[in-house]
Length: 143
Image 1 (cartoon, rainbow, N blue to C red):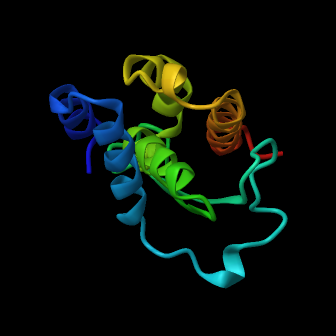
Image 2 (tube, rainbow, N blue to C red):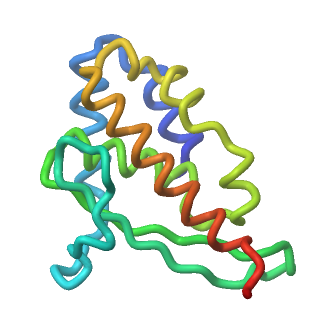
């Protein structure tokens, strides 16, 4: 699923109930995260729900810096959907692109700020910060 497709789909859904169901459906598209990856080190801090992210770096095919792939899961259906949206935006992208892309603007554009609890919104920001931290680590010089 691409972020453009998600934006298009959101555009044709008239009610927040439909959009909410769509976000939950997006979460169901995430591949399963192995139990071994559900560690304290992979846990996203600042989320009310249980959220785990795993990132892997690989060289870009065109030499444009490392590309970062993400996998993740949550014990909350709506949060899994938010993860799917973030991964559509960020996973498989060069680390520099991740750092230059504003997920909070996307969050606002989709209308999620008005329809999620402040706790979920804060959790979304925590997930974005975790992704950005992994991207910063990918571009950091090796000591």
